[in-house]
Amino acid sequence: MAIEKQEGRVIDWTNGTGSDVSVNSMVDLTSRVGVAMSDIANGDTGAVKLVGVFEETAATADAIAVGDLLYWDGSALTKTATDNTPAGMAVSAKTAAVAGSVDVRIG
Image (tube, rainbow, N blue to C red; front, side, top):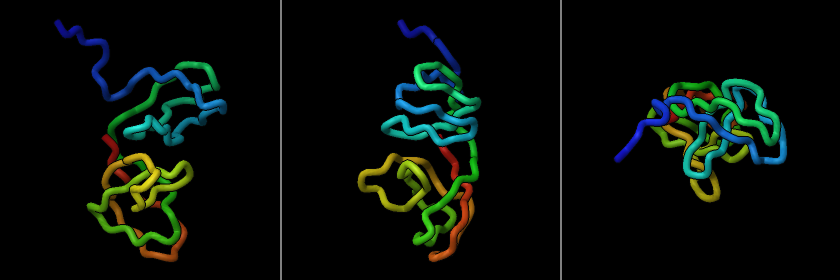
């Protein structure tokens, strides 16, 4: 029998990264990303949102179009899947060779 524990849009996450995580930071959850809803000290538990549209830094070299699949490389969103965590779908665009950010729909 399945017993609902949480709705699933926001989960409790225990930070075992070895570093503090700041509010609004991408959180690498191995097979996807979430966004920290508050500062989460290393070893503490805090809320991580799993769905929504968030603005985040994008890799300067990437040209990104609405609908592109994006990945988290630990510091920026990229179109490179290899060795990166699935982040979601771009809902804004960015040209190549331009530093900036894009909106990504996670979840």
